[in-house]
Length: 238
Image 1: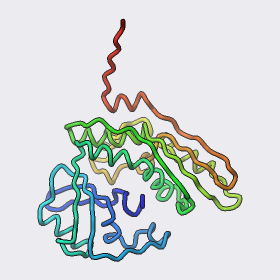
Image 2: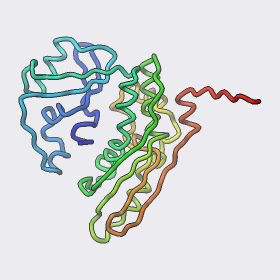
Image 3: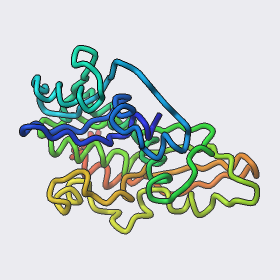
Image 4: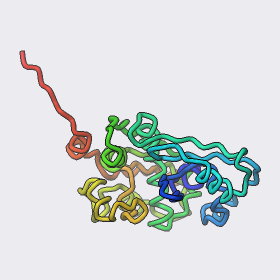
């Protein structure tokens, strides 16, 4: 569900309308997605639901494009839209910390994510910023500098999870330390051209369910998080 649906894997760019898309409609669009092949997941439906992170509502042309790509009738397509500068977007993006870790395991580390038995994550809800670009930076920094994820994994006999845990948190990336906005600018404001390895929770706890060992890696980077959130601390002295 994290990689096949929650992942923001669809770039919508139609007639000047741009959106980052996620949701179960991706099972229609990307039928040959390797994650579906790995899990054996198949879905056939004449309805589709998609979520767009965008600053405005899509027009009829955009809706028809999405419906065509999903091979459903436009009247059977449900589109949910949340601007990045909204509390809804802050919540849904913070909810991606778990997904980011699974994504890094699968896409970067070539790990068989079907070995994950249980998982959970905690991430700060980003303060709302009226500037959509700054809001995008803050929401992603919440995960990179403040996300904590727990993975309960059943490895193969004799397979160690130490290296996986070591390389999983965002701080393992050579790009760590730069804010999302700095990386976004380096990628010429193209979200899908950004370095993938930095998109991971700040802190990771991996439980080896075969040996009982638990690996704790990464850290919550409170100072960078406060800088990104533009926190103004007021200390009242008596």
